[in-house]
Image (tube, rainbow, N blue to C red; front, side, top):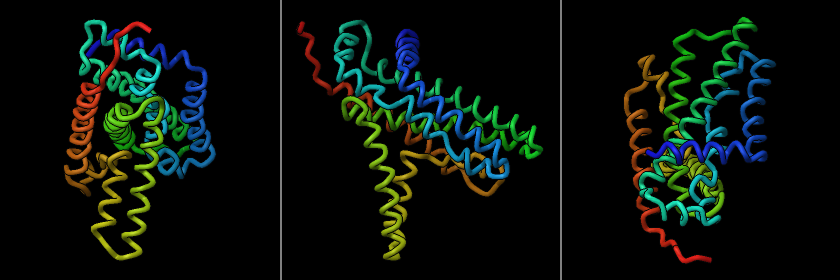
Length: 235
């Protein structure tokens, strides 16, 4: 990891007014719904994917498009360091924001007399952080495939494709196709099932799968960035 790359990435994100406006929307609007409908808070705060996508979109692809990647690799920075630093930057920022969001939601629910038990909320925070780790890793892989913010499009295409395959499998009564669609969807929008594991209604498989997908996605991202041919000639 490279602390300079991490802090520089945060500065880049903070300097983007457009992106910060989306962060405020994704952060604040669910809290308004929680305040209005406290009984439905679990449906409103279902997963952290929105926050991750806003922060992660273009995490590698934009550097390729702007030529920043060429300048970075002219310095003593390995490509693996670069990819892992980008992943860590988004993971830390998104994890902090989703924990803060759930914390504020918790205070709202306490004020409305609908607060969940402390263990449940803490487990949800931990589950969201695990989901952030996986989604960010997958976005790093997708961002290493395409320039700009094309990774966002790939994420949505994968998510929609998974849903279509599930519907087709259910309509045709093909369990194998339904399963493929479900797994495709869980690859880009994970379900670590930490709460179900704690309640004894699920095993370790979802949690292990989530970390395995994250590790594999980061490995693929490093390999893809290693294969990128960049020109170091002066423009």
